[in-house]
Image (cartoon, rainbow, N blue to C red; front, side, top):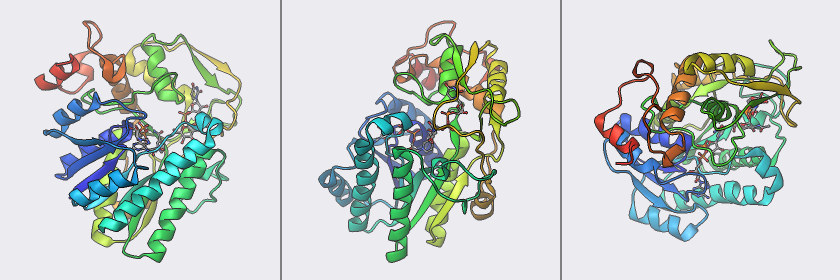
Amino acid sequence: MHVLVTGGAGFIGAHACVALAARGHRVSIVDNFANSCRGVLPRLALLTGSAVDCRCLDIRDRAALAELFASTRFDAVIHFAALKAVGESCERPLEYFDNNICGTVSLLQAMSAAGVRRLVFSSSATVYGTPEAVPVREDARLDVTNPYGRTKLVNEQLVDDLCRFDPAFAVANLRYFNPVGAHPSGLIGEDPGGIPNNLMPYVCQVAAGRRACLRVFGGDYPTIDGTGVRDYIHVVDLARAHVDALEYLMDTGRPLTVNLGTGRGISVLELLRAFEYASGRQIPHEIVHRRPGDVAEVYADPSLAARVLGWKAELGLDAMCRDAWHWQSLNPDGYLSRTRPGQRVAASARPPVTAGADAVLRGG
Ligand code: NAD
Ligand code: UD1
């Protein structure tokens, strides 16, 4: 298949490109680099074994998208392109509605005009809001608490309606829980600009000495140790699920909505301990007030994905921490990094990296 990946230069999209190539699919990327960096492209070329076709394009640019679809025959689309910061979405809701909802409509119009009717959509566990019970099943009540979450829910509803009223369309809504980790090569990973909002990138930066101390938001939740519990999922497992979902859509033509998580809840302190073990470093931390909008405990019931897609998360918390730290250590400044002596993690803690990869990491 020739697959168009919107937002393919971003954290999860880049890993999906690698997973697609590994299964023999051809990949093209569109990304406006609003939250990513061109430095990912040579690394993707190394991991996929060939130069990556990438257009710098905003998916809201209907003319540019139409031109792309007219010039290239795609079999399917995986749609990652979106803004994703919850706090920012509360400050600038219209920007989120425009980028995430209008962007999706623009993409669907271009696909429809070109006769491309298979789409995998990046949704989120945020559509469950504060779940009434855990583990959360796909038929749980949907309820969003911020504009970012609203964009995910509205997009799901739009594509569900599209599939209902135009049965030639088949869309898979993939509801991710908490994606973390990085490719085991250390070549691609999460590269947040500014102060990270999410736990794992923040922990990585504390371990690397870029930030002094982790603030643990709340120590009085009714959980195993009082800290928030989430379902962290390795980005490599998550990426693989996209290829499984795409192949399912191609085989069956049936729409699908599934949770992607491990099914295991991990507390902030459990993650901290696992990270300290993986990195060999202490993570200074202090327990502070709860973060507004946070819930105590959210983890997935991932059994539908296992039944329908044959997909199961394989990598555990230790691999998530090891690979996140490996990426952070090799790339202290994200994709702008050049490695310096002493920054590498022990060879025993990482899989082999090719000579070509070493050259890219040195900026070659
Ligand atoms: P990311 O920001 O790293 O990647 C998104 C990419 O989309 C970026 O490269 C950005 O430049 C691009 N983009 C944004 N708006 C665009 C536009 N209008 N036109 C073209 N490109 C555009 O984020 P990510 O973590 O890789 O997330 C990918 C998707 O998964 C997003 O839709 C996000 O909402 C969803 N998601 C992420 C998480 C998470 O924790 N990372 C959890 C649930 C869902
Ligand atoms: C957050 C978003 C959610 C989004 C998800 C993935 C909020 C309220 N929710 O989810 O909508 O889909 O990211 O992008 O922002 N924590 C700390 N200290 C930190 C950071 C986090 O203690 O510096 C704690 C949180 O309180 C939580 C856990 O770590 O208990 C995970 O937080 P985070 O990584 O931000 O993910 P979510 O809150 O699940």
